[in-house]
Image (tube, rainbow, N blue to C red; front, top):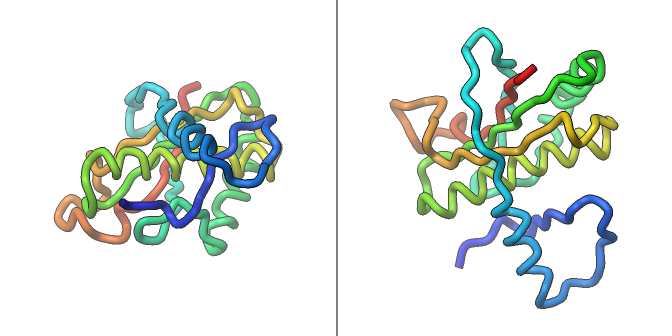
Amino acid sequence: KQKTRGLVIVPSGVAAAAPQASDSQEVATVAAATEEYTPVERQAQINVQISFDFDSAALRTDQQPKLANMCASMQVMQGTVFQIIGHTDSSGSAPYNERLSLLRAQEVRRHLISTCGVEEGMLKAIGMGETAPYNANDPRADENRRVEFQALG
């Protein structure tokens, strides 16, 4: 059974409690709550890539400065809705990668809301799995494990 290194996404407004059998059910429910992907033209994309370690949805310390810059931009653009799109490399099964990519997008969304104060309604988390590699010549390349942002307006 594959795991995402103990990352648990807790819905906002729910206090963290001791792990229980029902917690794994809640995590699966949260991870399955995907938004529908809305394609955006290339010029409307914000090309800030947040990278992740292999088989992990944990936000790396070296990626936090990128999110601080993104946070400042989002605060200036109040009312703009952003898609946070998670991606994986091609290691693992497609269903597992779809879930992991969504967990990555949700972790970045959670960070922007809790650390930067970005409004929840401005951020949509979407998991694309391995379907859109950054490096199509090497689907298992590190740079394919990322989260990207798109402004919807």
